[in-house]
Image 1 (tube, rainbow, N blue to C red):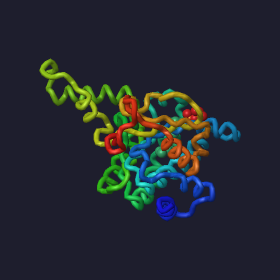
Image 2: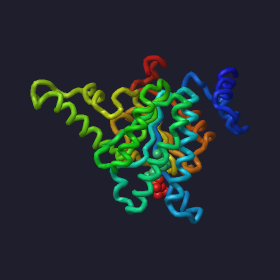
Image 3: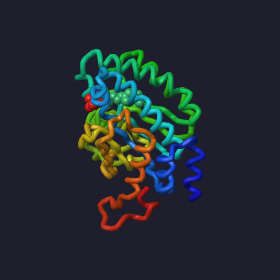
Image 4: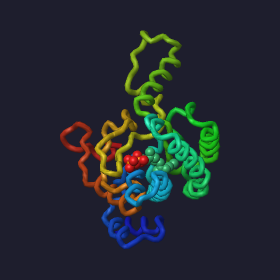
Length: 267
Ligand code: FPP
């Protein structure tokens, strides 16, 4: 199939398992926006008698694979959940490790982002992050702002409820307190979310088998297809990602109607 050949070329060397999966993939029906809850790093490490933080470090490899693969498949947007507003409840040493890892990661991956024309941004409340992390995120956002390819969003100190509250407060600020004159519409809210200019995720992937949404993109995933895999995040390689895309392509997306809308209308 010519589609598969094109993908084989852009993805570089692939394993025989990946080639077999790519053969089945319809490149014209890929999700526009993929969101991933990267779960299971701690369990992955514990199974190997390693400290939990080793799982986070290995998890960065899986993030790199997912980012590069999605960019090369011309996915418009990829959003990764790296640190939630609830994650501050973890031990201080693990939080410090994650913050340091994030800083290192952003710096180390800059060449990969530039090479693949990726625009990086961060979703969440930056005010509560250590200044060194904020500086790194600001610089990385600015350095990739002119890229025109995939938008990679990393959710850091992110909460879905916090995002909705922030959006409402941003709307109120634009109205100078004149609330009663005009009701807030869904469209107003969409325009003030952290993801304002992105399409809603079509596919939400969660690793490690947990059946939860965990306060991630609560508004935006209203019609997302959810793919949950038992694979722990550090083991989520390119073949597992391709499997999630194939599973997505088997779903019939109806958006509340009886028959699926035409592909163009669904977008
Ligand atoms: C969930 O696993 C993972 C996190 C809270 C952190 C995710 C961070 C990374 C993968 C590294 C940074 C990556 C990027 C892209 C900046 P868990 O610790 O909850 O695992 P468990 O449920 O097995 O304990």
